[in-house]
Length: 235
Figure 1 (tube, rainbow, N blue to C red):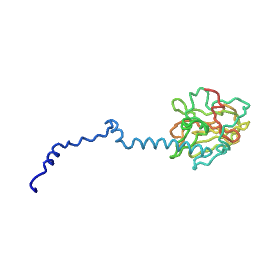
Figure 2 (figure 1 turned 45 degrees about the vertical axis):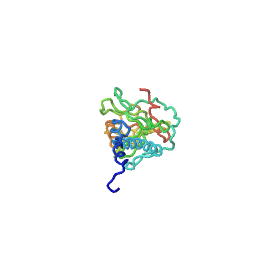
Figure 3 (figure 1 turned 30 degrees about the horizontal axis):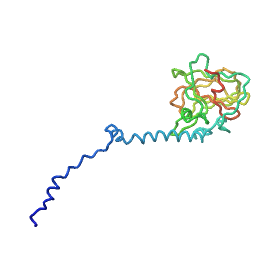
Figure 4 (figure 1 turned 45 degrees about the horizontal axis):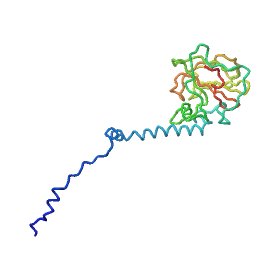
């Protein structure tokens, strides 16, 4: 019995079907995409950065970069757009006649959509800051003459480390205008200025380096930033 094989043993081995090849059931193209392990993490990280930036901007609307001392025009008391009074003279755009310029970054809308808010965030030093004014640039990115949007009195003229030269003008009716990213200035503190009078020349700054030559223009009404485009003439 030791040398004899069970009659069914050999037959069962010969009739055993070979193992079928294993397949994943996923098209080859999909496998190639899935093999790029960086794809989905990159998408998630990008979306997370925008979401975190928006959340930070909403909660820190009253903030400025810590390396810069805030001016009186940077202090806010409310996140909602206040109802403004008409000044004694109509607003004009803060650049000289004949300048071919437009808004390159708008005001951060606290009550706007996520898409609108994302367009008004300044990315500086891995942190997002809400834009409390508007950026104005020429079509060709050249420098241009900055003029006063309203008549008033020059409160301060400072060389800000991140913002370039800054001029703050106090106007009648509760308005204060801030002009930043200037390369030169032509006025002094305490000086009375007329609407349309030359203030200086637009230039670039470190805080918004990607904007190149531009003017940052901020309007406060009774201490609260308001969207300048709601006050200025339609372009």
